[in-house]
Amino acid sequence: MVRPETSVTYSGITKGVSDHHEVILEVEWEDTCSEPRVERVVPLYNKTYLMLKKPSSAINIVVSASNGRSVEEIWCDFKNIVYESIERFVPHKILRKISVPE
Image (cartoon, rainbow, N blue to C red; front, side, top):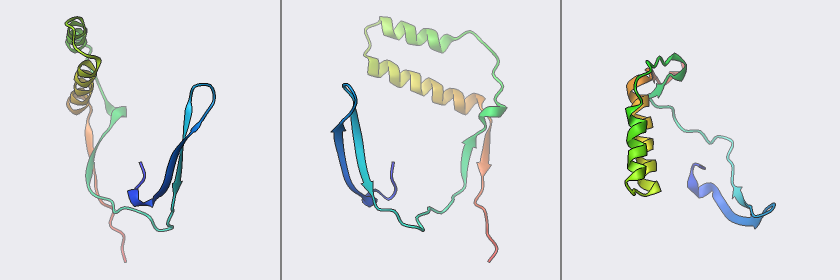
């Protein structure tokens, strides 16, 4: 992802090795291209403590797969389970905007 998106001047695809393709991007860079920091909540993965329980969510995914659901639907369910687990079991920290004295 490039920000701002208007800085991309060209994008193209070229033939790569074997059956792969390469993406070419030309981008205009500015020396002072920075975004202001805002307060946000970030997960602290290294402080995570999970109690191992019966993997009921994983069982639900397997059952969904056997019920004829599409791969996209199963993938969306899996992503939602992962995001919900991160919100529920991983501690979070608020990163505050750093004030620079003038």
